[in-house]
Amino acid sequence: MERSLALSQPVAPANDPMMRYALTVQQQLATQARYPYDARMAQGTVKLRLGLLRQGVLTTAAIEQSSGDAAFDRAALELLKRQPSFPPFPQDVIASELVLTVPVVFSAEQ
Image 1 (spheres, rainbow, N blue to C red):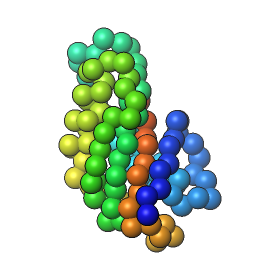
Image 2 (cartoon, one colour; image 1 turned 90 degrees about the vertical axis):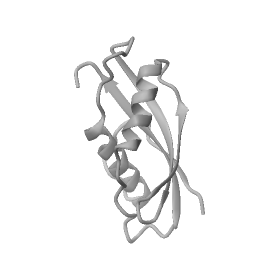
Image 3 (spheres, rainbow, N blue to C red; image 1 turned 45 degrees about the horizontal axis):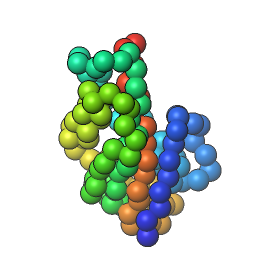
Image 4 (cartoon, rainbow, N blue to C red; image 1 turned 90 degrees about the horizontal axis):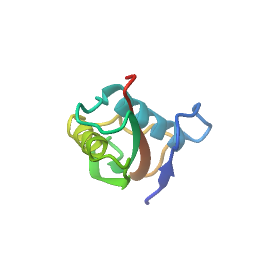
């Protein structure tokens, strides 16, 4: 079963376990994001579409919405290469696979 979840910005964990999981993934990426030295803009947001298996294994990744700056887009994809895996799904998520859309925010103030 494929479920697609999108977070436009960090939100407080909701009662929905899939939304809480999506926020966990977003936070994991945010802590590892590195501002690219060759960025043309001061800030940008790349929306990534991620396919994940129950064990937290990344199966697919693509840019769903570009930041408009190739350096940010490249940095977001490189960020995924540095992730060994993501946490397994919580027990109350019954899906065996999720497709999440998560924003990666880059700011010169990072």
